[in-house]
Image (cartoon, rainbow, N blue to C red; front, side, top):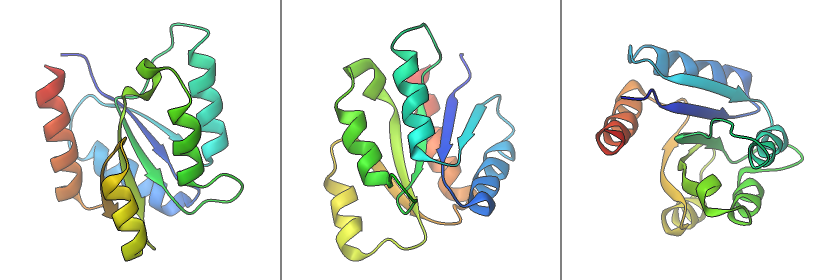
Length: 135
């Protein structure tokens, strides 16, 4: 089985560290890459179109970030070729209103949403499902 590549996109370094730590506690050979801005993550995705670079299997995406927020990242992602958009995307937010939860639940590329900090149980649920489809 190929290890999953997981991207965490979050400008809050404490939340980013907590998510990374939670993933590492699952004791699986995941390749975790973190970004503190959506712009940088989008640039890496764009660059992957030019080469044979590793694309993420899962993206954990914060919504509230300066410059480019999570919704804007998703809009730009939808403009990319389908193979680049194949990642499972989960929203992580400390401030997800009912309106944003509804928007996330109906968004075509968002698989789910979780409150920050993400729990070990939520991570197990995300990655347990993803590993079943990866095998």
